[in-house]
Length: 365
Ligand SMILES: *Cc1c(COP(=O)(O)O)cnc(C)c1O
Image (cartoon, rainbow, N blue to C red; front, side, top):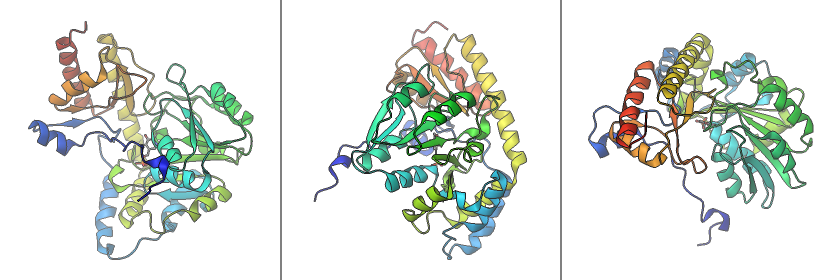
């Protein structure tokens, strides 16, 4: 059998280690997962109730167009219904964009340390990824612009950037969008936008009117606390949405996901509360990192990239043995770990474990 040659050497995505696996492997009773930027407070209780009620309808196919959820979201965002597409997580929207737009040999531009799903989907379609170095952990928009050629199809801007947590401010983004050729798509991945409190942070939805080549990605997996349901969305011009809709599977989001998302969207008070708690958590962790003399990138999402001054894999393993799962393995930042902002209690447990581990490893703290 002959697979597509470009997929043979693709790496399989390595997710954050699951809690169940760590408990079993290490014989631990209590494990704290701060590895996948999940919401430590879970979802709105209204979402759980809506999902329970929906269990009555498991024998029915979902509404493939997610009409009710689309209307509610369009209303919430102030956009037209036909500007929205839902996916099995916003991961799927990335895959649909790649499927609909890339031909082998097309070029696509992204940061050299960003969400890996952009490159993996480009690879699958045989598109060439141009990876542009971050500057101080932030997208270097001028350098990205300088790499645009006639072959460029899509530029990916992750804002805040995963894993560094930095943001591109509004002014810089607008200058960039004004300079990008109209035929090049810009995908603005705003998976963490609801967490951002910095006033310079742009609202991608507002920019859609001025830039018809813009696509904004958002998700119910992060602040809405519904990662298990697998539901995210893209917002763009009706023309782009109708193109991606052609390559979407007919029933790509489930009844449970649509019901949960609808209820979660309606509970904006819950979102506000999570945002408030997250901001407090960032301050808590940053104060501890300063005390431990560890450098970190400015954090705007619900995670922080911190320099542990030792090979990150060793710190990862040592934390794991203490029942704390974080994220390491960032090729360009070999001494950094990415840690999700947990509850105050989880953050405290993480810092206590980190301090012990660093002392054992001979780091002056
Ligand atoms: C988590 C994440 C997503 C998507 O998550 P889904 O669960 O697929 O919606 C997209 N982009 C970034 C940068 C993320 O961190």
